[in-house]
Image 1 (cartoon, one colour):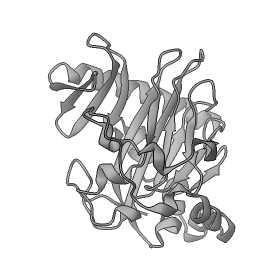
Image 2 (image 1 turned 45 degrees about the horizontal axis):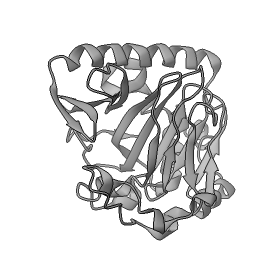
Image 3 (image 1 turned 180 degrees about the horizontal axis):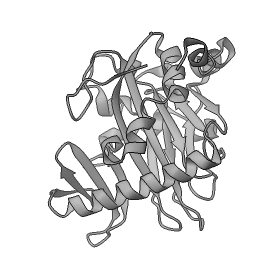
Length: 265
């Protein structure tokens, strides 16, 4: 890919200002209908493979959710002991060639380089985020930075990009972001006695009235800061809401779960 072509994917000064001011930025319809068809098929292949492999993984429960570790990959299921519906796979890029290529796509990587302010980045982590029609669970208000602060000494340089494989709407539980919440840095978690409560942001630290709905067509990208408070509601619609969230960092640092260094861009 030529340098000129890469530059067309970089963020403009206006876009970068918006991201830094609000903690998020949406670019709509970046991927084509044809590409999305291939990517959706890729997602379902990855889910099927992870489901098969989970039979031999290390299973455990946290706050009523079943998790299975398969080597360096964690699979999270929907609520309930008997539920076989996968909610999250992290990381997921290695489960299918299309997903593996996606983490190096210039349309994703070049804007991330603009955000971090570097000429090259490396992969930190990625996950498939799966909300099946009518039963995909929501996720409470949280920041990503508290999850990573003990594993990275540059947690403020771990921007996320969400690629929606399906249209994201209020009905199917679109991503929601608390506007400008990233400006306050890493905030305290709740103390409700649950195992994972500390990872959910203390509600006294923000006002839900400041939330912005990330409703966007399939193929759109949502870039958001690791300190941005975000969450989502359940999928109450007849349509799935599948997405891949990719997180990057400056070059030459190892990935979160694998320890592999994967420079891109």
